[in-house]
Image (cartoon, rainbow, N blue to C red; front, side, top):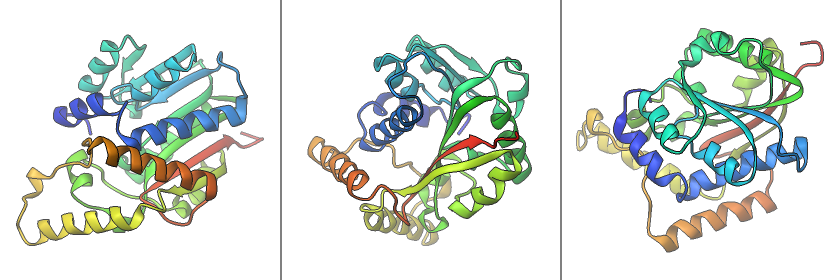
Length: 257
């Protein structure tokens, strides 16, 4: 998404309000608590932190050792406007960033879709190397090619994943999948219908690819809260689901890594 100033501006404005970001940020905190309990002194790196919404969320929940890196000057500028400790760095150069430092938690949300196979393999190896013993890597990922639509074009996403992709890649990088689930299952028919409609608009020439728009917009307050509530209920009733537009994974370094 580097270079897409308009998308970063929308993210900065909406990620504290939009149901999807709120759910994602809460999922991250839940994964952290499952591993570290109520500790707030863990060392956490948000690798590909965008405009800093997650870091800001965690700071408000009293996590005190937070760092971020991102390859976008727009994203870093928005992070620094929030007073966050963020460094401008492309993730392909992660090995050069404080190489001796290890982290309890590394978060890499909606980032892997921007890398080629070789780049992703290298990145996963480096992420695994930078984790402390007992540390976790949290990632959220675009899932299932059937959900591809204007949103992917608008944010420059190059690929979508299924769990099997990471079941193959993670062990080679020195990582073991601890938990993985697709979400949001309950909203997937609605999301799929919207994405298919977007795809038909492109196919029929009703919208040009260069004018594609992302799904980052704030619906009416009642609808935003309804969507948030539905997904929260899904999490409680169906903690693991077989389908959804996103794939949330928590992995750990292998014992011998």
